[in-house]
Image (spheres, helix red, strand yellow):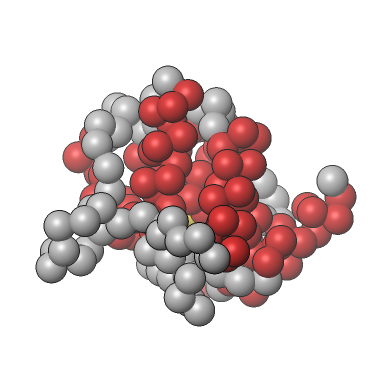
Length: 174
């Protein structure tokens, strides 16, 4: 794994693969929330970022902007297909590489699998409720942005440190 994490498209594709295997439809909003949850739990268990991109606090929760852009055409309908990411120079689908001695890749897939088992059947709205709770990283950043910029703050990054702290607390409570 690269020190800064995988592309969000690679993580999205792992989740879309699990979605297909489980015959559970996944919408763009649900996919964004699941990638965020996987990132948070990965931080809590490994201390390392799962994705290399910034996560922003938008009105409807934590969002990875590149995933939003890639799948927004599906609206609230199930995603058909895979994520290609922003690298238009390659014809391969972004994924976590399957290498024999890649313990970090194996660990990442295990955490994504656990996130899918825990949250995969939940609706996009329920996932949004989970990530919108008071004192979550999204809530802290979004509320701070509202105080600073008014009712429609956009593009405010949720720092990995806040996400790490929150998911470590959840891990200790489990």
